[in-house]
Image 1: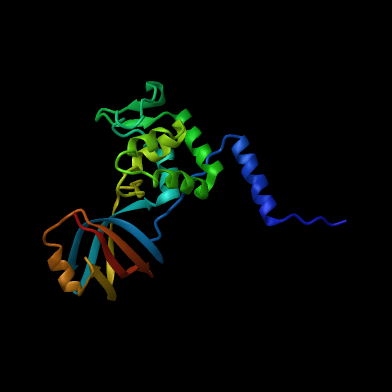
Image 2: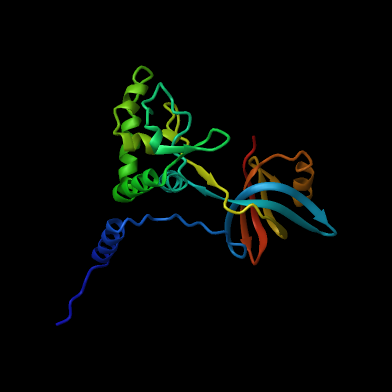
Length: 228
């Protein structure tokens, strides 16, 4: 007799085994230097002979649920420990570096990651929807009434006026020098630039967050995502 098992059942079984053994789910977002979209900070844009190059410090950028998971993995949970919001966590929950930054202990990281894995992106959205019911008179109350673990998850991103869910991670500070294609599409602050214009614009260097699409190891599409 041949038994068939649904794909969904297999996924649930694997998930149960991993969680029961204490595994956490790492978020992977590798740099694709041949064909792919990458994010980074501009270090320099220059022309060498007839070719144009970008010097970029690649980063990983996460949004929403993936950002929450990445923060948990890195232990970036406790910002200023606000007294307005209920962030009176025990000191055993975190360690501090020489700059005063607070990072969750391994135990707390695992607890948060396990919880996030269990509730999934839909569960996180439900938590955020709770916070979206605030008024200017009850914004502290809404946050403070969440369970402790949910406060630790949303604390780094909670703003009663807006949601800033992004999280940026720099895992490799090696600077890459990448050649532009002669047909590359360049967008800077919603304006189309030529390669010459891009080099001139870069004469006033800033830490611009850029989105780079590579094809055959050359830049085919380039956009400045953020200009402070």
